[in-house]
Image (tube, rainbow, N blue to C red; front, side, top):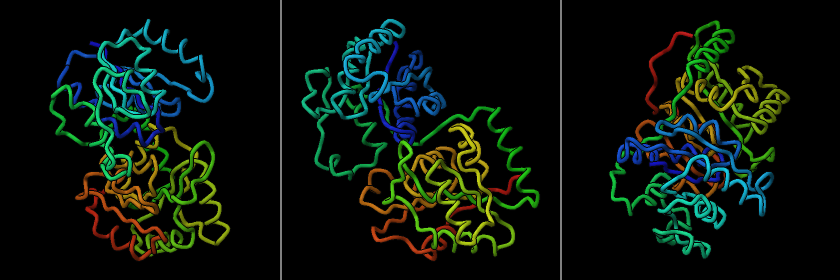
Length: 331
């Protein structure tokens, strides 16, 4: 049986569908799972255990408007899916699921799209108000299948070549063999910084100084454009004692890098979800009222801090020191 998972979100969204793939592969071990997602998320989707292939759907560009029909026709011809699991709640995602020709189509009954689905899941007020953890939110779509959905762990496979490359890169920049502490202080989408999700440069600089004073640790800043700009601001403000890997990794290389960190500090972003998936203890920083949905379920190996008016360095340090530490690695 070929099963298509449809999630048209960004990297963080797609990492969180890994428990869905886990549950489906356990229930249907001979199945092939194909993910339709945004182009930026294709590579990480292919790293999810149980996923056999991933295809990019560009809803605002190549596949906009009536071009969705050509995309669906080509997909249907190649994969011939029998089941579509629609994880994104908008109309377009359900319409795409319908066009794939899958006989069984599961998804939320939202945006007047119920007629496109064979199995409709109620879209509750709690879900609309971001009060349900995203893993539970996605897994609930599988309810009609009556399969085991108890494993809620985020998981990704890291290609061996990426592990080797990032071990070499970090070895060259960490000759003192310090414990590496990752930091993702900012985020954005399509090149635009999401200011409400970003940490302040002053508090981040204080945290970096704290780590440097320990004598056995070094901060590594990771992320894309927003984090690169953040690193530039830190340097302009006189704080440059950190390793800068911003805009220097692919998504799978970032996963390999995060795996090498002793601990990680991150705003609500794709790197945060990726760090949880590779089992690096993470302090998750939230500055808006979405933490109940997007914070990791594992509160033993991760800490979740939220304050809509900002988080002080001492709060982060306290949570950081309480996190379990990884065994020291040789770089």
